[in-house]
Length: 483
Ligand SMILES: [Zn+2]
Image (cartoon, rainbow, N blue to C red):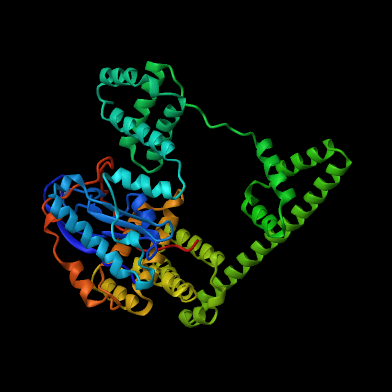
């Protein structure tokens, strides 16, 4: 069973308007492993002000428990200006929640007194250290980031910027310049042109003032990359061989095989034989893969055709649900796109209905939790979604749903081109599940958890060092497309 969240009413640190947020004050990674990543990524206890758009993690008292390490830490934000007695009471209350949550035979002595950390940064460092991360390296990187944020505030006054660069000249090197370039590129990729421009100004100023160019990541030639893949494939077992050939299929072109043959010709007799055998094996696997891809595209087109001609497409999709695969969605999406280009609204409507039916069929084959997440994302927030959420928590239990949602969010966050709105929405959903009272929470601890928190309620404090970001006025995503 997971720890319920607490609803707090705080004043937005930017516009002072009241905002209600759900906060998680017990981070017990034994119960809830995804919470560690959320905390480390600044994704936990996030205030998202509906009035002014400021967004960032809030500083709230919390305890962190990792029973495996074991690690039991308590953090109280200095900004809250609690008296010593209040601090002790708050730590005691949170520590008690963990103690009461732990089965009697697993209660260890360290659970009585958590180790107090003096700042949010110290909390993060302690956690990372326990995970085996090199703290000195993290500190150096954080110092660089802080300096860049400071410099970003000076880009409108070139004199101040260059003075500040000279002042920090000792810590600025080509790696630092590379970090600035990387941030510029990242902001541009995220469509944040304002920030991209600022980082570019800093990069240019470093070049002009300090005569330091950004270190460029070593560029490898196509030949070097070919050789690297060839060496990997020579060592691969059957399963790896198939996976790597499939993953690199777009690069395995005529040029690649010219290079492979040339390398074989240059090698000694043994190497030549080995490389020619590799070529043969690759060619036959690629032929089989291409043939398979062609077959599934043809099958998808036939199914698509059959659906268009059918009087009852819903029944047909149900009957042939096993055949709904990525190739089918590819064919369907391509046709929707074409109908849209040709402004055939009638066709678009019919095809979109097919799309919904096919998604339903696909969902019916998903794991129940994943299916639910998909449904939740397609349902606009409101009473209908709340009902769906509640019944899901009843059916699967909150922890399993939270884990599914947060694993998906973390996974998407790690992928480069994920939609940030989708990620926000997933974390928001997980928070919502945490805030939904679940039947497995004993009455006593529920009462403890909903007790209003006056001390934190007066004024919101964003965690220092985390720059608040303005939200964008974009509509939320409504659907997860199958990959
Ligand atoms: Zn605000």
